[in-house]
Amino acid sequence: MISTSKVQFVPGITIWKQIVDDLQARIDSGELVENQKLPGEADLAKAYGVNRHTMRRALQELAAMGKVRIQHGRGSFVAKHVFDYELVERPRFSEWVKKYNKPGNNDILEAAILNLAELPELARIQQYGVFPEYPQVAMIKTLGRVGEEPISIARHLFFGEALLALVEDLHAGRGITESLRQHGVHDYTRMRSTISAAMSGPQERDLLKVEKGEIVFVCENVNVDMTGVGIEFSTVIYPSSRVRLVYEPG
Amino acid sequence: MISTSKVQFVPGITIWKQIVDDLQARIDSGELVENQKLPGEADLAKAYGVNRHTMRRALQELAAMGKVRIQHGRGSFVAKHVFDYELVERPRFSEWVKKYNKPGNNDILEAAILNLAELPELARIQQYGVFPEYPQVAMIKTLGRVGEEPISIARHLFFGEALLALVEDLHAGRGITESLRQHGVHDYTRMRSTISAAMSGPQERDLLKVEKGEIVFVCENVNVDMTGVGIEFSTVIYPSSRVRLVYEPG
DNA sequence: TTCCATTTGTTCGTATGTATA
DNA sequence: TTATACATACGAACAAATGGA
Image (cartoon, rainbow over all chains, first blue to last red; front, side):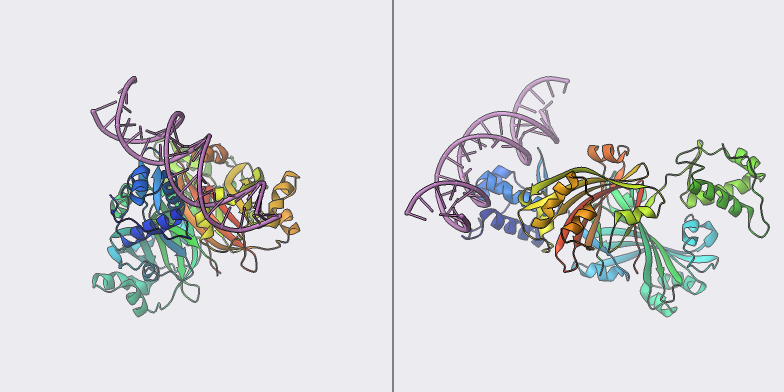
C-alpha cells in the first residue's frame, strides 16, 4: 500500500499532474518497486483525496510514459525499467552502463580457442570479407549486467593470430579491453549490426532470467579496426522486456 | 525438381563451393521459390554428379547463410527471403525497395485528422520537445509491400497546422512525399528511432499475413526538418520473419 | 462448468474556473 | 459586461475483463 502521507496540492497546476509527479518520484526513488501492484483506482483516489476520474487521468499519463502498466480487471503495476541501448559507431559496454548510475558488470562465462571451420556462423562472417582467415579464433562468452539485472549475453569472436592470446589473458584475470590494447588493438568501430528477434531459448531464459515466451533481440555485430580490418564478430542477445534499441544519428 | 542441366565444375575451387554458388544463383533468380522443397540429398547429389557428402557440405553452407532451411527427417527448403531495413538518417521507403528489384507499394489504409489530446502516445511524443503543439495532427496509416509481400504497417502523425492538408491531399489521390513538398517540407531527417519487439496482434497478423505467435518489431521514429522542428512521429511495425534491421554507420 | 468479487473501462450528468470574442 | 467554449474536477452507474471458489 502507498504511504498515507497525503500530497498537498498547490494551486495553478492541475491536480492530476501533481499526482503524476508524486508517483513518478516514488517510482524513481525506489519506494515503489518493479511489478509492484498499486492500490486500485478507488483506493488511490481516496488516498490522494480526489475523484476517481482525476486519479485515472494521472494513471493514464503514467501508463503513456511507460512508468506503470494498467491491466483491465487486474489493476495497475509499476512497469519494469527499460534500458535504452544506443546503436553507435564506438560501442562500449562501460559507457552504456554509466548512464544508469548503477554498477555494471561483464562476467566472463567462457573463453576458448575455436577452429574457424567449426563455426556455425562462418558463412555469414566470411561474406563481409574483412576478417583475417587465420584458422583459429578466440571465443569469449560474457554475461552483461546492470546492477543485479542480466541485460545481455554476448558471444565474441576475435580474429587474427595475435588475439588468440585473449583467452589466456582472460583466464589470468585481465579485462578484455586491457588485453586488446596489449595486443595492438587500441580502437575499433562498428561496421555493421543486424538486428533480428527470436523467442528466448532455455539457455537465454536461464542466464537472462526471463520467462518462457519472452522475446529476445539477436544482434550480430561486425567490428573493425581503424584500417578496416575485422577484429571482432559478436552475437549479442538482449531481452526485449528490459532493453530497447535506439538509433540516433548525429 | 531442380533443372537437369549439370554444372560444369572448374578446378581450383572446391566443388561444394561451386554448388553453393549455383544454388544461390537459382534462389536469387527466382527459379527456386520460397518454402519450395528441394530434392533429397541423395537425389541432389546424383543430379550434380557428386557424392552425398559433398552435397551435404554445400547444403550446410547454404543453411548457415540463411538461404535454405534444413529440417531433420523432412528435407531442405528454400528459406524465406529477409529484407534488410537499414537505419539511416534519411529514410525513404522507395529507396529501400529499389534494392530488391521489386515493385514497392505503400497503400494508404486510413487518413484522418486527430485531436492531439486523444493520442495514446502523447506523453512519449511531447518528451522530445520538438513537435509544434497545434491541437490537431494528420494521421496516416499505410501498409508497405515489396512485390506481393506485406512488409510494414506504419502509423504516421504529421505535426503543424499546414500539414493537416495532407489528409485531403491523400484522399484526392496525391502521394505523401508530393503533398509534403507542396506544404513546404522538402527534406526531413531522422532524429531518433527506438526499437522494441512484441508478439503480433490480430490486426498485425491480418495485415502483415503472419502466423499467430510471430514476433514483430515496433519502431518509433522521430523525424525533423532541417531546422530541427518536428515534422513526423511514426510507429512502424515490421514482421521479424521477413525484416531484419541493420545499422551501418558511415 | 457456473458464479461471484474485484478492478478497470465507459458513459451519463453536474459544477466551476479560465480564456476568448 | 455578457456569452461561449473549453479544461478540470466530482458523482453515480453500468459494462467488461480477470481470477478464484
